[in-house]
Length: 329
Ligand code: UDP
Ligand code: MG
Image (cartoon, rainbow, N blue to C red; front, side):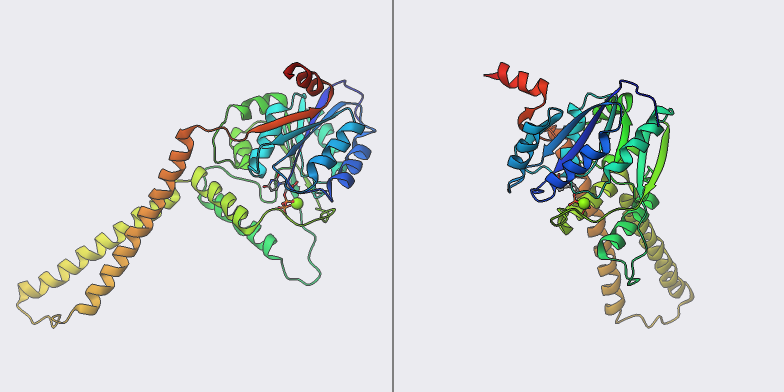
């Protein structure tokens, strides 16, 4: 194992309605970091939980000096909660991981070893064990399709199965802080930045407790962000379909003209169904193109408003936070 370096490490853990899991998670985390010779600070970001998560976190912070609890003003979503933690984290290394135990804290030692060896970014990659029934779950299937799609049409390649369990060295965190876009997919933004990156595969354990907080709607939102904030391909699709129909129209014109020139009977008189067909297809593709443009305009609108990505209600715990609270009174 690496010799003590005296370096500081910030752990960023976004939690949303995890009252059942967070206690067990913290115990796991403490066990994993106890033998490591670093100065750790744990930032729990409570992403507007409506259950007893805040109280559970408060209890943890009371017993553990190195815990800071950041309470957001409402549920801003996983990516925003992670951003809140990354903005506060002051460590030489910053590691983000989920608070449900699916990102095993036992890997932290290995991640730090890789970072000490000179890597700027340590990405962990989820490698799923084969399912006994041989039937992939919807979640797994949709995740595969998600990565396939964004890597096909996006400008930035994202490693499949590499979610938000990663280590970033301080300069990388500072670079990431400069990227204030409202629609965020951190894994895409980290991939875009580059830096010396290494991949650490792991088998994901089951959730410690509770249910996944990623509803279908949230997953679709994330996929939309991945597509429309990293790719202009949807616009090209519309343009290509439009061009195809122009070519078809030209061909039809030549066809009709050929009858006129040769003086033959075309027999096209009824023509209603073919006209209707062309009308519907052209109309449909126009609507799709306008829809794509509309989504981009919506994204631009939300970006130009320049609203904050998250709002902090209060920060408690940790020596520094206690001081700030005192000053605030
Ligand atoms: N999470 C969050 N805000 C949300 C949704 C989720 O902070 O709006 C947290 C959640 O508590 C967990 C992590 O993000 O620590 C990953 O969420 P989850 O485990 O539900 O996602 P899954 O692992 O099912 O993809
Ligand atoms: Mg999870």
